[in-house]
Length: 581
Ligand SMILES: Nc1ncnc2c1ncn2[C@@H]1O[C@H](COP(=O)(O)OP(=O)(O)OP(=O)(O)O)[C@@H](O)[C@H]1O
Ligand SMILES: [Mg+2]
View 1: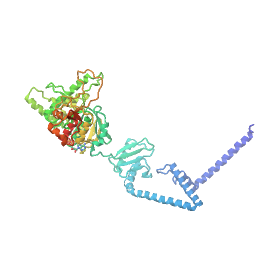
View 2: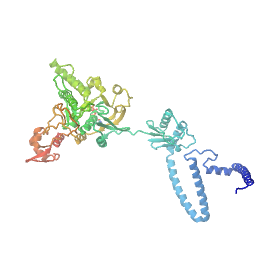
View 3: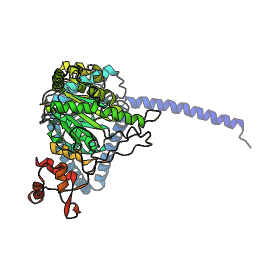
View 4: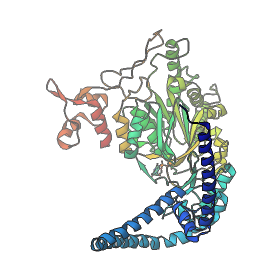
């Protein structure tokens, strides 16, 4: 049975009257309370507002401030209550608390005093100069949004959440901030994907003056077979690839800038990966570190350099087929429809062309003299043509050139402007504007450095690095530590190794080689001392060699016996011989 309608009407009317009068009195009470000074202060206090009722500018958000204030008030009230219950215990507890507080405030005060100079000299001026640009209120304490390391090696500026500056504004802020704290060369990094955008300023870590092999060894071992590790750069390791970047590289570096040392590191890394080194060193002693290595030939005199280049690129005047042409025949015989080469053309050959400016002059002079005796010879030296052939057609058959010179002009490269186009990796050191403009004019020139080994590696970008420094012994050790390739048969001056050279090369007569096999290191195996002397593995007489094991503690250990003759590792004997000289 429902209630009578009169009763319901009575309830509704009663509720309306009560709400009306209640609301009216609540409004009066509120108006009265707002006029009360104490109540208003209490309200501001517990809701995290400033004493004038506005927002508090500072590090704490309003909610956090309200929580701190409420907590603090509660703590005081509890302390009073505790004191009323047990005055003695409360006094002790408050005493301990006060002493701890004193110690803490002493520490904080000490830190404050110590950082006073830092704040006066750097933090406050930074705040004054950047706050208007960043839209930060002047009343915000500087430490609320600025952090500057005491040695000013780094700084962090936290922008207000509403900051939305464009690139120009951001650059202006970074620039002004860096100037204000004396970090002119600072690198600026913006972190915009955050509730409050952050600007970080850091001073670039200066590159070391010297980078020993030990620091780069792991990187070199990790690098791919066609990669060269140049050294540590400002933004990470600088590496280039002989296949992905460029088959040929150039070192355009002033006198004493570290050309020979950089070439040493370049070649030693490739030798480690199983390449063969062909060094053209007209200065004679630039690459003594590689003397007598089983995988390197050094050519020093004009006739030797001429012969070496003709062996590599061929000589039409004598009908000589060059190694590059031979390799291309092998590649043709073993390539598929896509042009992928499946035949083994031989170990990679890295040609180090020292001081090309002088070497070219010498080769031209040498050829002029030969031509003087035989006027039927062509005007241009076949050695220069051979270098061009290696440049143009060497890439696919693993022939890589390292051009070196104080100024890699077209003349220094052999007179062929096209050849210079294929040098896609260039390292500059102690460069002059004219030199930079000539070879890397597309990129702005970074300020040159006089530090030996400080190079700019130019590929499709410019990266500064400190070239890795290998001592001669370290380079030798690296060159022998990996796959040691044998010198190809027929290479001028190359010494044959006992047991024949295992040539991992398929010939043009082999029509199809189905798969690429790994390059087999040419280990000459074990030899007797008589064989070592006869084969020229060592450069002393057999009689002297027989005495050497007793006289020299460094002499390689015997590996076994053949009849009554002791057997030794030929490679160890060759190395011992190289170290002896
Ligand atoms: N990467 C490097 N790190 C540290 N020092 C180096 C580096 N490269 C070269 N040097 C120093 O510079 C000296 C000269 O180096 P290097 O002989 O390679 O220069 P270069 O350019 O070949 O000189 P030149 O024009 O006389 O042939 C070295 O003896 C070595 O002390
Ligand atoms: Mg040199």
